[in-house]
Length: 201
Image (tube, rainbow, N blue to C red; front, side, top):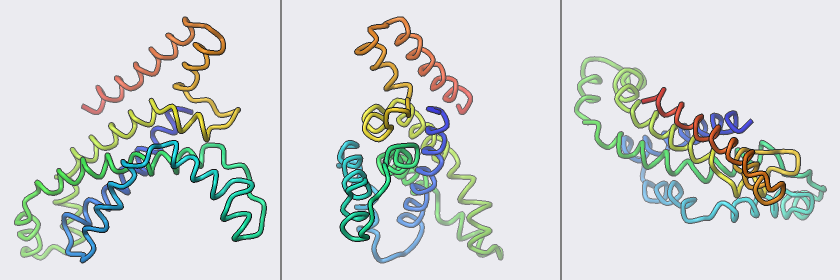
């Protein structure tokens, strides 16, 4: 379950980060400053603030569900809320990685493809996207690693039945006082992260 969450968060966060990075670095939209602020703002917000915001807005007695919609919301604990909060927390990492890669791509290469008759869409898939693959891979690995090792978000939004490897380590140490089990889980977590990085690199 921890790996599944990490993969999902990495893919979604990298996709959103790529959209922001491409829009800011390769297009002429007039609101680039605003987009940069939106892309970097989550870094200034601790994860537990985002978790409490989700609970406050969409919980059983949440502001949106109870006050605005007039209904009693469901529990927000589980995989869905974890994905939302972790994507919001980590996609700026992917954005900054991809922004540097996209900025380093010479615009004349794309212009040459367009001058040869390629459409903007074809130019993106045959020129820009392949050249930005190192940034995509780096962003995915970074977000995956951070998601796998996160503790605060799974603790607050995971619920009693949703267990992640990081929370299991703390539980084995502080509740069960089983240092052997905690060490085993930690080694497994480390091995998975290292294996992913070795395969990708």
